[in-house]
Image: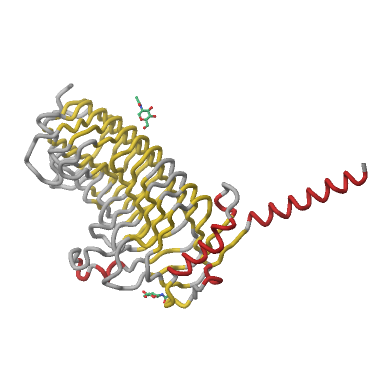
Amino acid sequence: MLSLHAAGAFLLLVGLQVQRAFAFIECSVLDYGAVADNSTDLGPALTKAWQECVIPQVTTTVADNVLLYVPAGDYLLASTVTFDDAANWNIHIAGNIYLPFNPDLSGTMFTFENCENILFNGPGAIFGNGWWYRPDGDLTMYPNRPRLIRFQDCNNVEITEITLWNSPMFHVTIIGDNNLAHDMAIHADHIGETDGFDISGNNNEVFSVTVENGDECVTVKTPTNGFTATDITCLWTAGCNIGSFGSGATGVDVQNVFYSGVSVSNSDAGIMIKSYPNCQGTVTNITYEDFTFDAAAYPLYISAFWEGGTDDTGTLEISDVTFNNIKGTGTPTRPAVLLDCNKATPCKDITFIDIDITGTIADEFTNACGSGVSGLEAC
Ligand SMILES: *[C@@H]1O[C@H](CO)[C@@H](O)[C@H](O)[C@H]1NC(C)=O
Ligand SMILES: *[C@@H]1O[C@H](CO)[C@@H](O)[C@H](O)[C@H]1NC(C)=O
């Protein structure tokens, strides 16, 4: 009996030690060639630490058991890094990461491909220095300028507590299922092609984020089935949108989208569903609730013609869209509600409840039906 107890205690002890070790495996980039001198390229050290330290030590599905760790300090990220088939670990950035100006730098600085259960967190920051790549606001000078973070075909990812500053191009793209972005901020110049969050896939969620830029705030792309955004602040953005889908896009499929608790100020648009007149597919069961606008141009806007084109041959069915409790101010030259849909396939069941947007011109409706605002014909 005694010896059995002793053996049990010994096993328990080993078990505890193993558990404790697992809780804090840290693969610091400083041990794999990184220098916090803001001039040594962090890229190769990230790859090396991932391959030599993280991968061999991942043995559970608890992402934060194994950290790819960037400690406090200033780092230069001069090359792109791709984590292919990554699973079950945590990229933990405590430091500040800076992008250099390099006209040849292109692609995405952090790409995760075919990934599963990755935690990407701060409290650090990534500084894109995007202004260098847009001299005098010129978006055409370096058209291949880098983007910041992309999850391509990734599931169960969480990105949080990291601050992103002024990417040369888009900030966060997420493609996949059951992913989560929350409690983080993006601040960029008030200029185009600086999208905050572009998301597609199933059952993705964004909450408690702030985006300041001059383009998409938190936007849904096709295909999407199930998306929730809550507690979103958009400053100087182009709003929280669906689309655009690209000229001639077929098989557009966006459904079961829910936005709630969103504030949009000084924006080019508030809520848009934007498309071309020759797209095909379905956009349905979309709900926008509890929005506050402050100087939003085009507050509520569905347009089959936003991206141009007059070839009104599309069969994109936009239906069952609800705007509920939307308050605030628009701009003096634009309507609060503008529905401009396909002739062949009008927008259907567009419902407005408790809309109080002031400082705009009269609403406009073309090829749409629904209820809740005067002038909109019933379906
Ligand atoms: C790090 O370098 C970048 C340019 O390469 C610069 O923009 C940034 O201000 C530097 N950071 C610090 C803390 O010196
Ligand atoms: C519509 O979408 C919401 C999510 O916003 C979902 O809860 C609801 O079940 C969907 N309704 C239908 C009929 O699919």
